[in-house]
Amino acid sequence: MVALKFVPLAALLLGLIVLVSCNDSDEDEKRPNRPSGTAQSANQKPGEKPDADEGEEGEEGPPTPAAVAAEKAAPQQTAGKEFAYNFDNDTSGQMPAKFHSAKTGGGAQEKWVVTADPTAPSKPNVVAQTSTDQTDYRFPLLIADEGSFQDLDVSVKFKAVSGSIDRAGGLVFRLKDPNNYYIVRANALENNYRLYHVVNGRRSQFAGANLKVTSGEWHELRVEATGNKITCYYDGSKKIEATDETFKDAGKVGLWTKADSVTYFDDLKVTTK
Image (cartoon, rainbow, N blue to C red):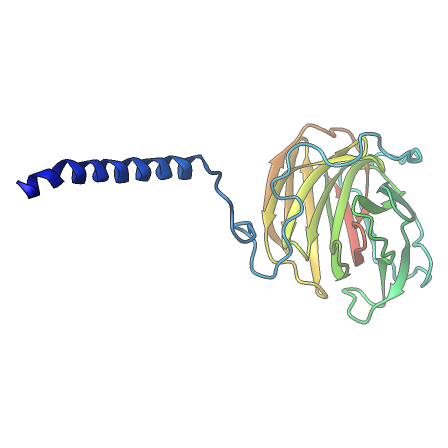
């Protein structure tokens, strides 16, 4: 009889335990998940700088672009016309002949000079962008003045020397002015190769590849552009193939860096297709 008196009490206690447990479970479901640690890109290796362009959508750049000087007209080149620049007959410490400098974005003035480099692919000289201004949205340009090119094959050798914000070198083509052009560039801090169009000073990436870009060593960038098809090579291997309708007409070619990149260039070559 005594044992029977405890049965209702045990049932009541068991019910209370179940009710409390259910409430705790509900509260856990309502609590937001809190991430732990630091997120890392699936393509990012330990110790490697995150890709500043990864995950971006739309355009980069200020709503109102910095004013730029109008480009002087250059004759459009016919098929088979070739130009080559190795900077070996230019004066060290000066801008190379047949080029002018410009800049997309803000920051201090760009500084392009011819300098000797014992490792140059064609000795003795290279052309270098040496300004180390750390403004992030700042793109020094060195623009060739002799011609404009629609369908083309253009290449250059480059060496990423230094830079903490960026360490990159690129090829510009179908340039209308310093705020409107195509650019393909390789970045030694991010280990990637990216293709953009820049429109009214705002750039948008539309193709790219991840690959090893070694600082302090010479590499080759090459672009073939025919109509709306653009094919980009890195050290002789095809890495990017894309189509784009932004710039269909002929434009100038040139060299490009970003932010505080100190980058050397040699053997710029362009052929009209």
